[in-house]
Image 1 (cartoon, helix red, strand yellow):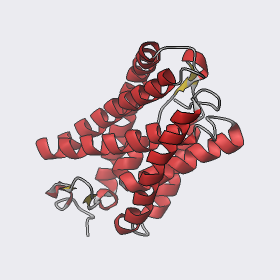
Image 2 (cartoon, helix red, strand yellow; image 1 turned 30 degrees about the vertical axis):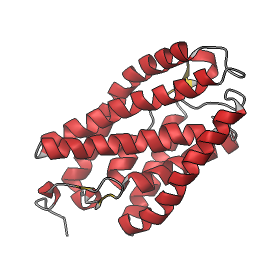
Image 3 (tube, helix red, strand yellow; image 1 turned 180 degrees about the vertical axis):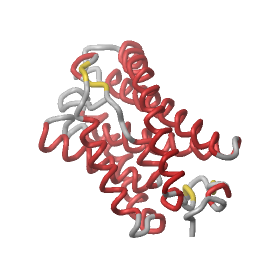
Length: 232
């Protein structure tokens, strides 16, 4: 999923940076209203965990890679705003120190993994909780968020690569097809991991998942969290 320097046309790099800057500004402003001090250790732990998880990848089309993203867990556990900032830190350090991804393509990678890969799973999780009550809604929402979030992130990356006709040798059709097929299978694993971790957090520390809402949409988490032990 990490797109290296030189794989995207400069116009695509600029556009993705502009989009991501808007989300960064929104996230930095909104995150302060969502996170409390008790979330900071969890944010640090999850950031470190998925920094390591993303370093374990395998090559696919034209030099890009496939791997677990971690966005769904970051989104559900921390909220999409903090999840975006956490993913940005992961991608920036990987690009700057380890050459995984790139600086010119950081905007695209953050858009794919930190915006699409975080906000989409969060919305799917909320929708699942609205439809299905109790633990089943959590498990199903976490799994589908991980699966669908990975696929849509891969599709975005495929489009960016395919549209870069000056830098990338494959068409949109080839890039999107290969990226989405590989990340469908990775998404299954991502969904399972997400469901396990979120279910464990719900059982042990449900207060950490009691997040207000995603402001642009206005959807509140359902009342199942209020009935769980340990919630203030």
